[in-house]
Length: 213
Image: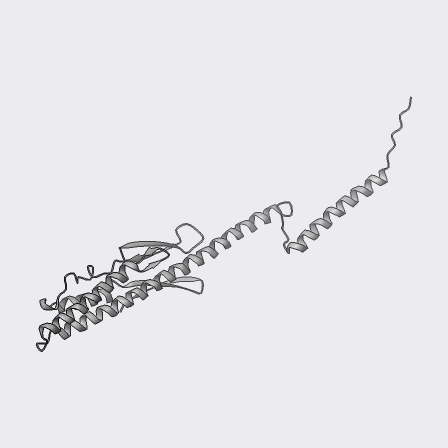
């Protein structure tokens, strides 16, 4: 008995072409809506891998720029605190010079000593309370590593130093003990050895410079 297979080859070909056109139309609409030539690996597997690598680098560099700006802000915060400490220290030096003249009475010397004590306490307060994002910038010696690149090892270190009446050599300072030399040494310490390295982002490059008075 003969077998007859009923099929419509023209219909199958037409349906296949419609499916292909529909798939191509969907791809075109996806590209138009996203504005991207590659939306998935099936569009261009090698191109997708390259694009993913570029995207990863861009995101890393963007975050590195944020880190650099945070480092700049920390340096500026520390510089402001050092400036305030320097102002108080200069006043202590001025008072010390005033106290060395022989025309001062005991009451005058006592008043001068009281202000000096207040100034030194203010130096310690600024040192202990100056913070950036919870980090004490002058309360202890420390080194902060700032990630300024998208890859390992692309860092810049910021050295923080403890600056207070103790590290400045002004513990137990008294005008009655002729401690003018101490204040001169302390001012020199703050202006030289205890300088601070400030940084800024310029032309996509993180530059640091030494700040001192």
